[in-house]
Amino acid sequence: MARAKEKPLYSNPTDYEDDFYLWLYEQAELLRLGRYDELDRPNLIEEIESVASEMKHRVSENYLDLLIYLLRWDYQPQMRKRKWLVDTARLRHEIEIEIDEEQNPTLKSEADFILGESYDRAITLAAIWLDEKPTFFPRSCPYSLEQLRDQDWLPGVAEPGPHTLPPLRDPDDE
Image 1 (cartoon, rainbow, N blue to C red):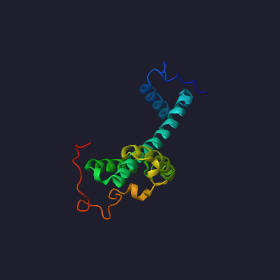
Image 2: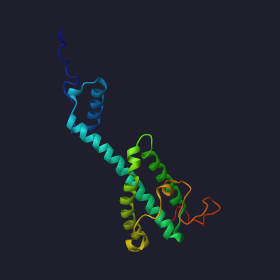
Image 3: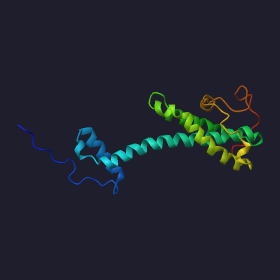
Image 4: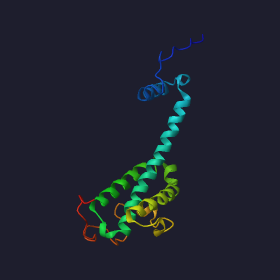
């Protein structure tokens, strides 16, 4: 005997544009229950693609910010601040989370490309900080991915550690 068609789970499903938060939870519940015919497929596909794009964007922005700090550290040593060390550590940690090899191997494999794009933008912004032209910096990134991910590495510091760092400016100085 054929089973009668199930009643829709939501008699009045939330519209994607009216309450995005609730719409997400409804879509998750429909997926969980295997009620695929009731999914808002076009918007769900768009949101899934958006999540992937946002992940790549976050990695790119974190590399951008990290590169700006490192370029300033490298080319503006008289202005070095302890805050820069804190910020580079935080950015490296964020990058490590986003490009975790087990969870996001494809994103990690795109790191060279992302870094190249980020470096192009970083030299433009770092040039503004240093009152230089972007051509002041090397054409390609002078730092390797390994160096950028290494919490202990800084340009121009042979063996990182508190004893090797030059005196730093007060963290409240901007």
